[in-house]
Image (cartoon, rainbow, N blue to C red; front, side, top):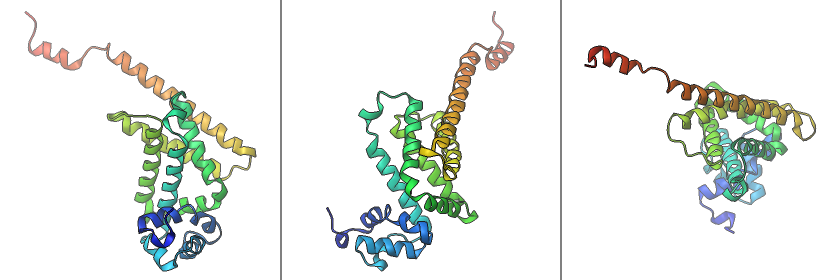
Length: 219
């Protein structure tokens, strides 16, 4: 294991990322929380600051990235290959929420910061990245329009489920699990309807062929 004093800034960022939320719960995503995490790791506060030049946004980015890395490690191919797609997505969403659960107030504060007008682009980027990584871990290889539609839909599902989770006082956040199941059911129904529409549309007369026949009638 690399000693903190010997870490590069990128390595320091990775090491500090999961430590900051415990302090952000009380102090917010500010320099004080970072300094306390640096002291916990055993590195100078000034050096820790260099790893997060944009302050709160960089700290939140790094924390979310650390959650993603843990999610990828927890769900290797051999674990998910026997699961249905909906089960994979459900488990991945719940894993992210379970990881954040000990620092729920830090998550609430992080989302409030990302919702500020000056941070909305960054917030959207991080939401897209989370959805993209979940789909990739789930085995999605789409490169066409489905690549974008799947991630856009999952951003909505994950975002709305997170809001329910933040105020969920039920045991084992049962209300969150129930809400997520309903949202996934909605998505699966939509995907089924879309598939049926595509199949039926292939049987409809082609407008371009019809116009072509008008211009070049068969002899």
